[in-house]
Amino acid sequence: MMLDVGDGNRVHWEVHGAPGGKPAVVVHGGPGSGAGTGWLRFFDLETYRVVLFDQRGCGRSTPDAADPGADLSANTTHHLIADMELLREHLGVERWMLFGGSWGTTLGLAYAIRHPGRVSEIVMAGVATTRRSEVEWITEGVGRYFPREWERFRDAVPADLPGERLVDAYARLLADPDPAVREQAARDWCDWEDSHVRSHADHRPDPRYADPVFRMRFARLVTHYWRHHAWLEDGELLAGVAGLGHVPGVLVHGRIDLSTPLRTAWELSKAWPGCELVIVEEAGHGTGRGMGDVLAAQTRRFAP
Image (cartoon, rainbow, N blue to C red; front, side, top):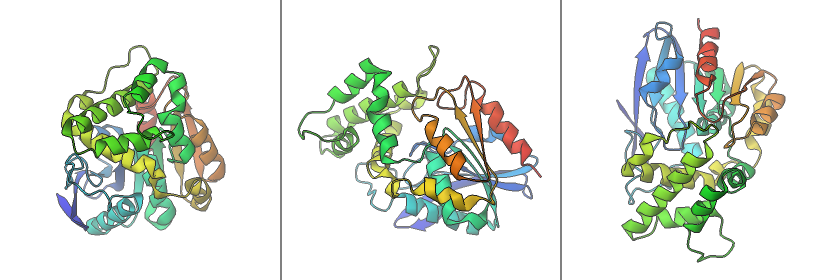
């Protein structure tokens, strides 16, 4: 189904599980990954009513950010929060669980802080708040663990503007009038994305990056959000979670997550009275190495 959210955007959504079940909404990562049915494995669909939606510009939502002519000016965190509220009202949901990961934790927490009365619980993994320091880490600092891959990522950018941040440089290349330049920038960006999530020798490349349309969509949206630090004041979410004391929350994070180090989840858990931090010792960034089992256990815990 499609929901007209304004600004020329239509958001794709679908509902799975029990019609009268406990409402939960999946806040997918990226930005730009889309919400596939793989998220449903974390829920008992006999007790949950699970809402999947593709954020603006990605998945089956329109217009597609992979189109270089797609305007991203009306694609911000604040627009996505408003889309979530519009979807909740459209579905007649009073309160729902927020469930997601990675970028989805930034959006999910921003939504919860704005609309705490609409949230029953929060379960998030691979925690990030998109602060300036986090963007600098994931685009530059983490390169100390992957020096060969990071130098390739850095050197793919022409040194036209000395001192330009890599995230800004890639956004510029992705807007270049030459399609070959745009396509190469999307490939280089996604190669780096696939490098810094690797924490085990048996890591397999993400097959989605083989699709040039997905690469362009993903690279455009990630750079768009990261270079603007999600349109949030630095530390805004860390300060805001203090007001979520009445909302039960569980943050699940891998001990060896190099992309989004544990520190952010730790800081949030200390600032949020109703929050529990669960550390998965062997896990990195993603739902492998026991993360999936822990997440499924949390939804069972909050099941009616």
